[in-house]
Length: 124
Image 1 (cartoon, helix red, strand yellow):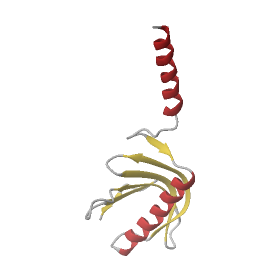
Image 2 (image 1 turned 90 degrees about the vertical axis):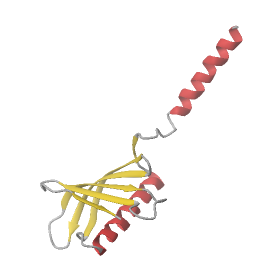
Image 3 (image 1 turned 30 degrees about the vertical axis):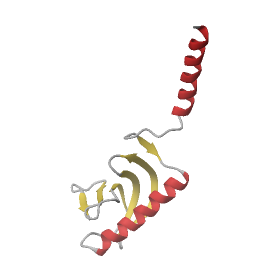
């Protein structure tokens, strides 16, 4: 009986040790390393795609934070400064929800800038 209790305790400690490394599905986590690089590349390509339509021609000037969340796809949230042509840059929150398995409407971008009443919301 004592051996069983020690075994259960040991397994619990191992589970706790590895739980810190595992991402929590649905949980928000700050991105770093290669994940951050991939997210920044996604931001640039999504803003470029937005500019080809009837959307603004935003360029990301400075990204202060990037978080990721697994929710029926991937939701990346960026705190960034965006420039639109010759206009002064704005501090904005950009959210890109990507569902790459969908042939249509697999990408959604929302942009909310400080001082703006409206939020841009596009899906393709």
